[in-house]
Image 1 (spheres, rainbow, N blue to C red):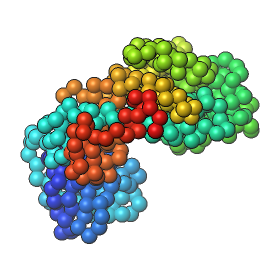
Image 2: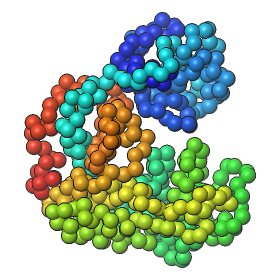
Image 3: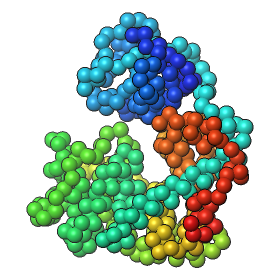
Image 4: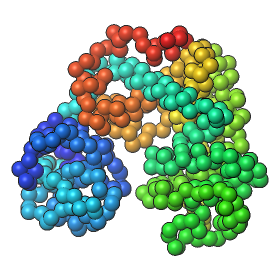
Length: 442
C-alpha cells in the first residue's frame, strides 16, 4: 500500500465526500513514530495546495482503533488513505478537525515509482543532477553562513560556533531545543558557572538549564539514583540564578536510546571547554591543507570526538543502561563539522572579507566525505534513483536544500532539478556560489 501511495504522485483521487484531491508530493516516510508520511503536499479542488502529514490504513475504522483521534501527533494529518471501501466511522483529530479520506487502489508488491520530474531527469542525466546538488549544497552553507554573520554583533565568535554545535547534537527531533540550550548556556550567568568545576559539574548545569534533571520532568517514575543525586544538589544551589527550559520542549520518545536528549546534553557539556580552541584552530587547519582541502578532514573531526566517562558511555538516561558507545563518535563528529563548523568558518570569512578562506571552505565541502545517511537524504536518494546515495557532503546538503525549499512545498515546476527551467549545470551563469569557490568577491 505504501508503494501505491508513492506511485500516486501526480494523480487525482476522490474523497469519500466527492472532493477531488491531486497528490503533488507524497511526503517522506516518517518511521515508527506518528503519521506514516510527513511533509506531503496535496491540492484540493476548492482551495490551494495544502501541506501536512498523511496516514495510511487498511480500513477506515483503524483511525479510531489506533487512537489517532485523541493523539496530538496526528493533528497535522491532511489526508487519510485507506485500502478498504467499507464505510468508516467518523474521523476527527484531537483538535476536532475532520480528516478527508480517500480509498486507494493498491496491489501487493506494487512498484514504488512516482511521477516526480526530478526522478526522470536524474535517470537521463545523473552527472548534471549531481552537479546541481553540489551547487545547492554550497549555496545552503553560504546562506547559513550569512545568518551566522548577521548574529555576530555583541557575541564572542566561539559562542556562535557553540550554538551550531548544540543544534547539530540535537538531531532533527531536538535540533531547535538544543539550539535554545546552546544560546542559554552562552548567557552571562550560565557561562560563568559553566566555565568552572569539573565534567560532572558542567553536566549538572547543562542538564539543569535544559530542564532534563529527574526532578524537572513531568514523569513521576524517573529514577533519582546514581549521578542524579549529586547533580540535583548542584543544580538547587544554582537554580535561583539560572533559569531552565521546559522539559516538554524535548522529544523523549521514538528515538534510538543513544540519541536521547539527556545523552546529547551530556555530550555538549563535555565538548564545551574545547569549543573556543576549536574555533581558534579550524580556519588555519583548512587553509593549511592548500589545494587538497580534504586532507584537513581527520583533524577537523577530532576536534569534536568525545569518548565520554564510564557511566554515560553505558547509559542514555539516569539509571537507564544502553549499548556502550562514544558520546560523540565519528559519524556525529562529521555532522558537526559539516553542519556547524564549516558554516561558522564561512561566516567569519564573509565578515572579514577573507575570500581565500571562503573559497577553501567551499572546496572542502565539495570534497568532504558524506555523513551517515538519515531519513531525508535516504529519501532523496531513492527519489532521485541514486544507487549509491550522496557521494559527498555537498551533495547531501544539496538534497536537504531541495527537499526543504521545493519538495515539501510542492514546487516541482520551480525546482532546479526536473522543473521547467532545468538546464545542465555547465550552462548556468556564474553566481555567488561560483565566486565563493573561486575566491572572488561579489
